[in-house]
Image (cartoon, rainbow, N blue to C red):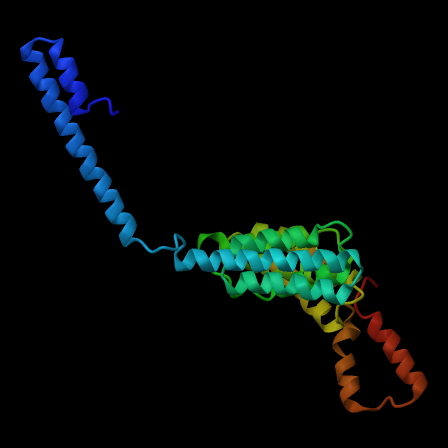
Length: 270
């Protein structure tokens, strides 16, 4: 029985004076009427709301998360079986799904998660990093979304030789962003840390272009000593090799071998 029901109020009013029993009885009637109205209003709102408590955006979010969980399980199965192509396909499907959903925070989390899994295969890390690096330019610059994505990729590629080229490109992009923001000192410090002359998998032309960018930033900063040291990493003959290729004068096998060796030594200290 409710505490303020009319019957309880009536029973209490018999033991109270008349000037207290009547207000108590009226108060119980008012509270009962108020609670009844509130209950009817709640039932009406519940009937008007859809039967499925999840709205369409939540349904999409739940379906995306369910798909990601299923793909992560497939990636784990393939990774434990040392199935490189299968694990790479599952990992790429995870990051592509999150990119399509524009879930940037979740994308950063899963890129780091996939790269740091136990016994993770190198080809999986390479595929995930290169896929995510291709989305850096398309990431929104507001709210620091692009910066967080670059930070995640730089953290993932740190200390891994098989993704050193991707790390160098990301570092150059970060240095360019710092320079555009007016922080030339920070840009110079970032880009000077990369020693591309030791990268065996990077193309010679890209190495030269990267070193020239390092020299340019140092000159813009006024660090002429560092600029001279960096400029010595490129031999002058590196700029003449393409002209020799166009002329076609060296057609003998021995000359081609010497030319190849000269091309390999064109970038580096001399």
